[in-house]
Amino acid sequence: MAKNGFFETLWSRMAQQGDFPTLQYSVDNIFKTLHSDLSVGDMAASVLSDFSLSQKVIRLANSAMYRSFGGEVTTVSRAILVLGVEAISHLTLGVQLLDYFHGVAPSRPQATKALTQALVAGEITRALSNARGINEGEEAVVCTLMHHMSRLLLVFYFPDEWERVQALCESGAMSEGDACREIVGVTLEEIAAAAAAKWRLPGLIANTMSHRTLTPETTLETHADWLGAMAQVSSQAAAAMGRDAPPEEVEALLNTHARALGLQSVDIHFAIHQASELSASIARAETVDAEAPAQQGKPKDALQRLRQGLEEVRREGAGLSVSQLAPLALESAMRALNFSHCFLMVLNPNAKRFVARLGFGNGMREKLEQFSFEEGFVPDIFHFASIAPRPLQFEDTLDAEVAHRVPRWYRDAMPDTRSILLAPVKLRNRCVALLCGDWGDTCLPDGLTEAELGAVDDLTREIAASFLRSAAQ
Image 1 (tube, one colour):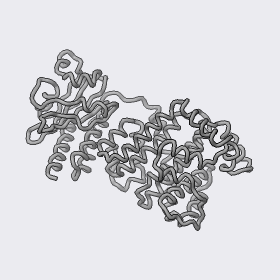
Image 2 (cartoon, rainbow, N blue to C red):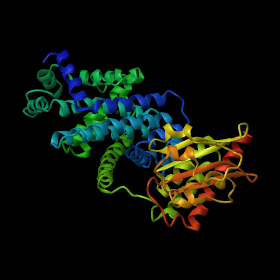
Image 3 (cartoon, rainbow, N blue to C red):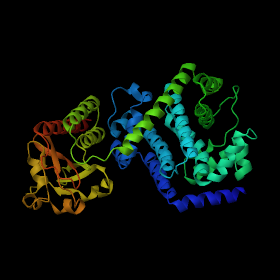
Image 4 (cartoon, rainbow, N blue to C red):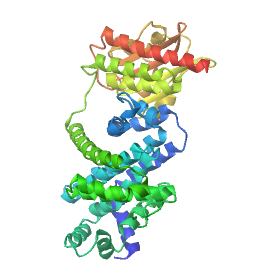
């Protein structure tokens, strides 16, 4: 098969299945986010728009690699605070690259093997980088995953050709790279490089796809050299683990290149252990996620969750401005109470209007500009909440007794919402913000308990304290 013909067929098959445009949108959105200097809240909203993705980001932030930051990470907002926007961006990209292939995977052993090998290789890279305190660890993981994209693309879009490649390798007739060139007319590196260019990944990542052979005497002169070498040796180690090679053999393989990569034996031992443990943990967790039905309404352990979130906000918030603490508090409330949507409206004292500044949940980023009302009193639920001494809950906004108190601007944006919680944030007895949450079309006839309302009130006090800190700064 000619090289040009192979790539034309590949892109055509990806487009026909309808999955590639979604991945392209995700990749574009991630790097748009990375280069736009977004706040913690904006970045958190981007990740939280995909529930599955946000769970995986939190799970990875809680892994052994990141525990040195102290304390359990329960929110995307805190993960961003401790890891940084750039690390989260690359982590998100890595997760979505793998998820793309999970989503289009046919049920066959080759797909499972290729995905597992890519995942293990990525974890080895992440653990090695983190052990050395290298800030570009997640960037290196993306490069490693991209090295595996060539295998995954062949598995999913050229399954017959990939079986022939594997047959040549298993017979000992050819190496995997030579067999690929023989069967489809291109090398694995060329496929990975073309995919990186097609998905408009940064040039630094794309340039690591074509690498020179790494030897113990190799001197790495550029960051791209180091990224490519890390991807290469992590992939070799993952392949060995996939063959059930003993840990000693895998460690010996990595130790061969330790000097060139600036690694130590203890780092390598940790990475091999971590890759095995974390990949198994993620596989178990994904099975649970897939089997567990989505929970509706308030969780049974809402009070415990609220107290845990409040503890985290207090622990992390002492030195945070309102732009940093508000996303953390908002997301803590959303996770604790299982809100479908949650947003924060802030008073503009000059305009004397409350305007939504931050929101989480499906479609909230696009709806924020619709949420605005004047400070002067009107007898509706938002104004009642703004003058209330503590959070107010409305069990059913479609009930005749309440429906006429729901302002049109809110009902137009959220037509199906039933139960709403509105919690005022007050400074010197003036409402300066409103925390608003709902459970979608699920009705909560019993609402929140007094203890739960008290915990939400405590969360709003932490937001108020952050307003004071920001004003002082």
